[in-house]
Image (tube, rainbow, N blue to C red; front, side, top):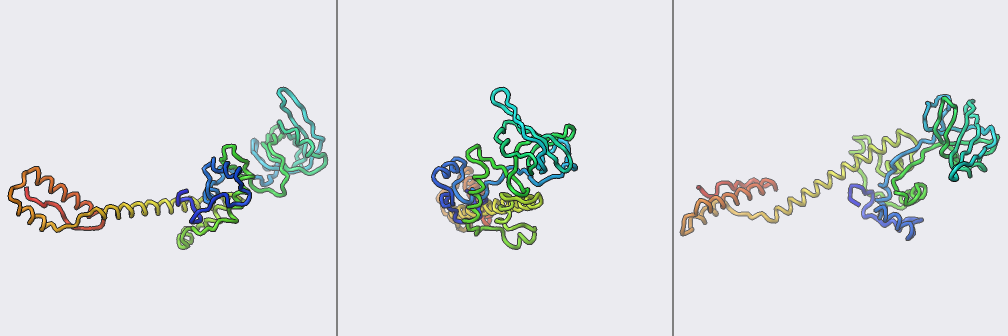
Length: 291
């Protein structure tokens, strides 16, 4: 993990997290997640808003969460190759709608005529139908987050690991306070938490802005650090000498330098001059030998 994506230094192994044994650790290693910083910066790739929508205000084709009262017994029909269709009717905000779940026959026992139900699906206003994808049992609305986990584990399992990382990480790396005030940024810990456990579109947008700034800030620090190391490396190889002493030495030679030799001396002097300028020195090395 590079310093660009770090909220604690030094980093700590994922094996220190609650619920991460050898088997889970191997799955995370396959995703190149080895430390707590990796866990915290493995951000969701998409969000599904499960806030309940009034069906009277819903647009045709919208994916939405609704709630209401089941009005008929759920019916399951099986057809070719083991596929199935579960259907029932609901009263949602005074609208009598047909709900269909494909290939989830096990939901029949959970849908009870006359009882409350909340579900997520795609609304067809013209037919007054909802093609359901998920029956929601948790209280309230909220967001469902999606991660790019390559089928290695479920998002809910990973979120438990993320929550454990929030409880264990030290969060001793952050943006300077003056930058957070100037640009109205969140503490990085709060921004990461809002992205993993969102409660509003506005909070997600503010959190994303903070993390993008954080990444750019630390990227610039890395570039500055690399340039400083390069400068120090160059200074080690600088040959400091007096240009007048060089000319005096050439004058003591018992022979006249050839044109090519003079050109070589001047090229070397010019190269050293550039090194001095790049590293903060101003000594002029040009024209060591008159041609």
